[in-house]
Length: 393
Image (tube, rainbow, N blue to C red; front, side, top):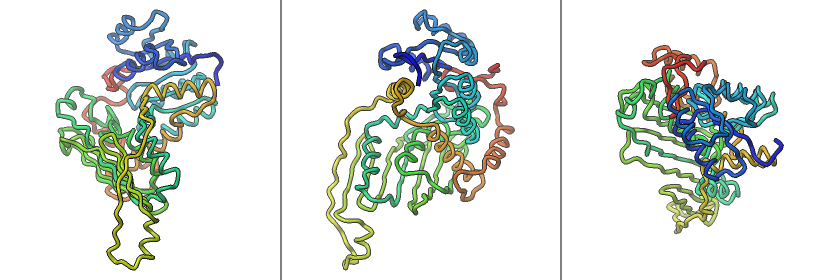
């Protein structure tokens, strides 16, 4: 824990997300957090900061300058994926706590390095999994954890309401490239859903996937994914994601021994059985057993604080030891699942989770080497979670 009544926070990367975090804090949504410093390599973003942030907020060109400044207790990292690990490790080694945007990194072994750095420094590392604050998913989590629904048998998540046109991908040479982003829909759009999948249903132990690269767009990374998931206790699942469906769908269905849960259109519908289906299956004399089941809406508290909720929980954790929204291991697990889906798609086979870091990194490096954009070390963080062609150091 830290001393004082507020957490002194620095934000590295003040693009779309970083600047929004600044507005939240300065607008009073995060009363236990004080914005002390920002950093961004782009001059126009630093000029935005000078014109829009209070004079007592220090402005730096490079994230490492901010880290070394002594102005902060913690940093919020809002830069592209490949820079999460080096900046987080640098901050942790300097004695700062870290709240990092999703995904944790591109490769799971880089996320493991971040966790080791946090453990060695005895500092907090957490991630911006703001969808965990959504009242809908919190209510589902509470219901599943209560045991009322029995064990999960099957889950299906179709999340295809991220439609993107070719113009979106053509807006920057770094977009939808292995060197620029390290992946497509899995790494860019899906991290929140992969985290929620694990949070609600548990960590799968194996996956068989198809990751179709450039199926709907002229891009080199995947824009259409279908993954068959296996869970340790025998449950199965299907995860479908795409940026090519119009209109898309966002429907999560969890089938359990004592009923079914469906999340769609901002509502949670629940069907409850009168008995455990496993008992019904082997005790009923009716070969065509049916049961009249009425659906009901799951009540929620209606609260959905999103990014402010994560920042506030981060501050409460540092000031009073309260639980953050997500821990360091949560970021690692989501990335392990993402890496496994990618590797299965690349190799065409079933893979266990977690996958071999060597196998994943080898396949990723092959794709980066053939990528149609700059090498990763020549691409620095930009302010809208993009990558530009300037060096970071």
